[in-house]
Length: 80
Image (cartoon, rainbow, N blue to C red; front, side):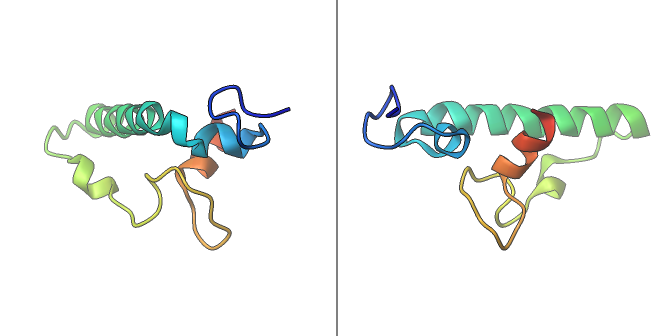
């Protein structure tokens, strides 16, 4: 069955997160996840100076698929 958003690709778990029609939504989800992780670290460690910049990673916060490195899709899979 083709993706209901782009109608071009076969719908799959990976495609949901990489579909061109979902780019903005996925960016928002990843940004919110990063902020939530930051707040949880700040709260747990009583450290309001902990910055989201410390969570920066070349591939981690991008919604792409890679067999060579950890990506946002891998994070999402771990929660699903």
